[in-house]
Length: 345
Image 1 (spheres, rainbow, N blue to C red):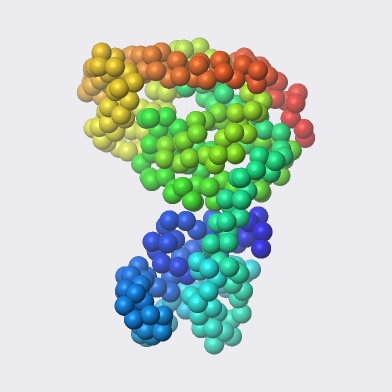
Image 2 (image 1 turned 180 degrees about the vertical axis):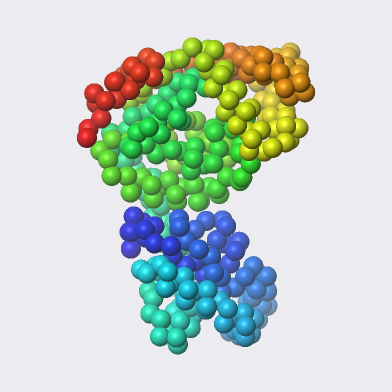
């Protein structure tokens, strides 16, 4: 079954929790035949005594109330999600056992042939050839604080990479909740692209990595040769945008100013070598004053120093390399008018 069709359903992943958390088919639920502790025990048994002994131990561990409750979970989910599949890693014993147990309750469900391994291979294959990205890609660029993320959300043609990565894309962009694993990032990204119904795709300009999530090689390469629309706004407006997003909104989410200060202090320390001791110390001083006295102007000062001496330099260098790809630059209204003139209905 094709990736696009698979992710339309909330499929049942019967692998262990550890396997599921590492990577799964987007939208799937995890009702494992073997929980992590069982999986480890059976793995040891397999190494010591072979396959037959491992299988015997598996049936011994998954029995009684545990087994009945598990089948009940499956049954309820299948009833509420018609069309879903059962899958394990290779489409082998675990998914086959699930089908057999369900059939004894007269519940018929299909399993994914060749399992998650095949699904994952298809995901990787999708990103090995730039020719598979046949749409017209438009990249929305601009200096940090230009409001690029909110800008692209106004277009149905967009895919929000930072939303999928659960990260804002900068050294200070880590969110309270964890990022997806690399496999899950690629799985979700690919599913969204294959489900994208428009002739043109809008993306925010990003580095190769968004936090710990790395864009697939050919995907990033395609971004680097696509049309680039650059939003230009005043420095003061950028400061207000960043102050609102990174200070005001974050304090509401975290509800602990000291925790946010420590988070940003650690982020600052990670780029200390690039800043140098002097700039690092100056930024830290204003940051401490901002958080210690709820001082908006102090916050805007450290943000401004960071933009001017770090982020703007990096991004302007990147724009210099991509001059030939810039098809338009201007304020938000100007960029909106340009996009209206080239986006096909």
